[in-house]
Image (cartoon, rainbow, N blue to C red; front, side, top):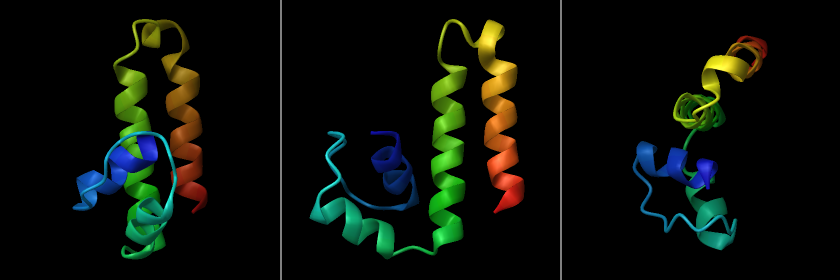
Length: 72
């Protein structure tokens, strides 16, 4: 679902249902891999920030997102 939400933020018009079918794959291929990764990581961070226990575990979650972004 996070992946589909990220693609929608790039301009795709997907139903966010968690099913990575033909439409999701097609949409993901219509953007550069770096844009898709950046959008996905941004959406993932947005998701984590909304969790009530982010103040406890957030530093580790955020750190992993940053590490992936830097290594890409």
